[in-house]
Length: 303
Image 1: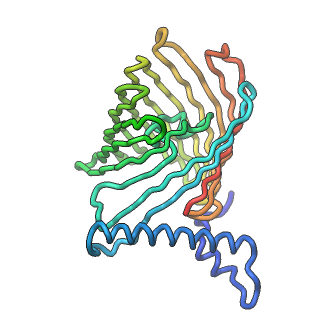
Image 2: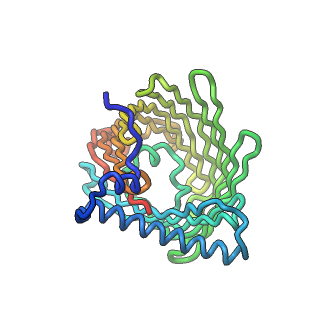
């Protein structure tokens, strides 16, 4: 079993590996460049924050972040595909109290289901836009309202209102979630989930996934049940063994698909570079539940 260690911090790495009068390695130059770009983004965001607010009301650091995501997908039936996406999380601490502005090349509210959070098998749908998130905690319930406008083609507006909470018990954790949403393509929708998590040891945990999603325009109700066994080697590297079963209500309520996957997640440099590799076996009704092996790879670069 690997020893427990924290993800490599970029600045700490540069200090630990700095040698007097020695030229920088390519790795050190890349990390220093990443830090410089991140500081530039934070400086631009801080200037915009002060311009809009008029003066500095808080000493909170600006935590604006930019993420570039490169993803590749392959399965035996459909072949290979890939995509590159971005997410700009603009934070304005002197202006905001409960809201934040986000620019993305995809609709991030579409990542509500376990099949997309744990196992994305196709590239994200291209949908450049911006959203304003308003957040408020009502007792133990986290509430968020997120309107979003898409800029590609004809401008379109979608909305999301989410309620989420976490109940801690002695041996397990319960995570209920309820979301009302509306999109131009799917109409009004309702997503609900009730997930349970047990921490078995410092290394192993089990998550029981139960969720349903109703979309009014196609009149489809999708239910996902699954189990995820997490294996945490240290704070940088982990494995998750996942099983999902999906059912739908059309033409009648029936089994639609089931999937087995293993997720390898490695944080190479904290808040800079991480990647995931997910080999999986997929069995779907449309292919008469024939085995369809595949693998997904995603690399995130953060500034």
